[in-house]
Length: 103
Image: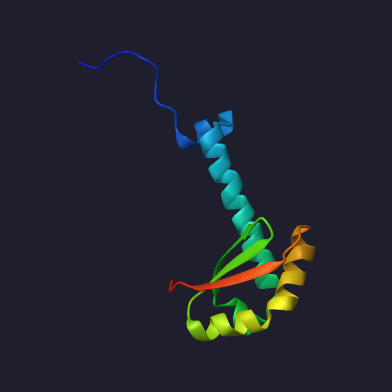
């Protein structure tokens, strides 16, 4: 026998209501997408293919790449990368951390 009560809400309904936890997750995902797009846009085409994640934490840009060799290339481009991301996002980027995480 089924108990009567409120019907469960779908994820899209919860997001539409502005549920605080889900809204924070959605906002974080959008910010990460913008940061990744800005990061890739500031890199040379052959390098950007190997960048698969980026997040801006305060003034520190963390970039995820698929191998150590490409991590070195991203670190080498650090000053230009930081300036390009800062200009694209309108936020200061003072530090760069590059992490190797295979896809």
